[in-house]
Image 1 (cartoon, rainbow, N blue to C red):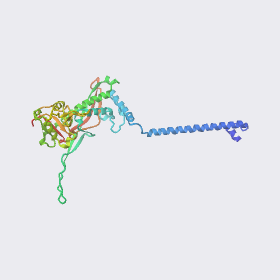
Image 2 (image 1 turned 180 degrees about the vertical axis):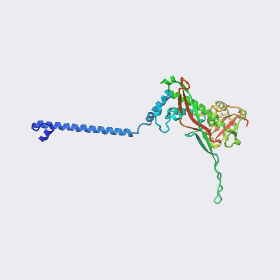
Image 3 (image 1 turned 120 degrees about the vertical axis):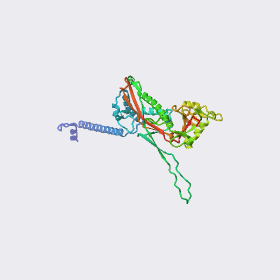
Image 4 (image 1 turned 90 degrees about the horizontal axis):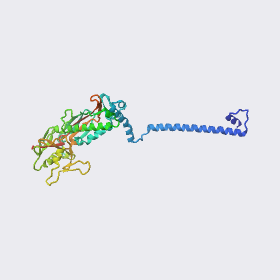
Length: 398
C-alpha cells in the first residue's frame, strides 16, 4: 500500500511520507482519475448525440407539406422575377428539372417556362372566363395533336331462342377526330423603369395581361375559328336542318321568322330546340348565347304567362332557361337573318379543347426601347368531337 501511494503522488521512494499525508495524496489522485473518466464519458455521449441528430436530419420526413412547397417554390419564383426584371437567366438555368416543373430553362426553344404560381393564375382566369371552355371537355396533351375516338353507331342486337340460329349483328363504327394544337401568343410590354421598381408586382401584372389576351382569343376561336392556325369553332362546321341531320354536320331548328323569333308562340322554337337533342345528351346540356340574345330570350313566357328564364337561387349558380344552365358567351353572333345565335347541347361531349400544360415567356428588351416586350405563348386546339351533342337555333323561316 505504501509503495502504491508513493507511485501515485510521484514522491521519491526514499522520502517516506507520514501516513495521513499518504492517504490524502492517494485520495487526491483517485478523485482526479474519476473526474477524467467523467469528462471522457460526457465527451463520448455528446459525440453520439451529434451523430444521431445528423442521421435524423437525413431521414426526417415530418416537414409540413405547405412549408415544403414554399421552400421549393421560393427559389423558382425569385429566379423567374429576376429574369422578367433584368433578363438575368442564371438563376433559371441553375434550377434542376423535377418532373413537370414549370420553371425550368428551355434554352433550345428560346424562352422560359412560367413559374407555377403565375401559370396557375392564368389558368384560373381562363377557366373563369365566359367562354366555351367552361362547359367543354379540356384535356392536357404532350403531343402536337389529340385524337378523339367516337363510337357513333349502335351495336346490333336481337332476340334469340333456344334452338334458332343466331344471325350476325351490326358492328359499331368508330370515328377518329384529330384536333391539332396551334400556338396562341400575347406580347405585353412594360417600361424598364417600371420593371426596376421593386414595388411593382411584375408577375401579377404579367399574369393578368396574358390571361386577358388569351381568354379573348380563345373564346372567339372556340366559337367561330376557321381552323387555320387556330382552333376550329363549332359554328364553322356545316349545318343542316335537324330532320335531315347526318354525322359531320350540326343540326339546327328554325325559329320560323327571318332575323327574329316567330310573332306567335315565339317560345316554341326554344322548346323544339331542347327536344331536338337526344335524351342522353339533355341531362348535361346547356344553352350558349350572347348578351343581346339573352336579353330577348329572358322576356319570353309560356302559355300560362310564366317566364322561361329563371335566375340562379344561390350565389354563383348560372341562370337557367327551361331548367338548363345558360352560358353567356359574347362571341356568339347576334340575332340576324340566317344567324345561328343560340346553341344548345352537351358541350362536354360535343366539343373538346386540347392544350399543352406549359406556358412560355420570352423577354425582348430591344424591339421596343425603352420598353421591354414579353412574348408569351402556349399551344391549344379545339374542335367538335360529337356532332350529335350540339344543336343550333337558326333565325330563319327554314
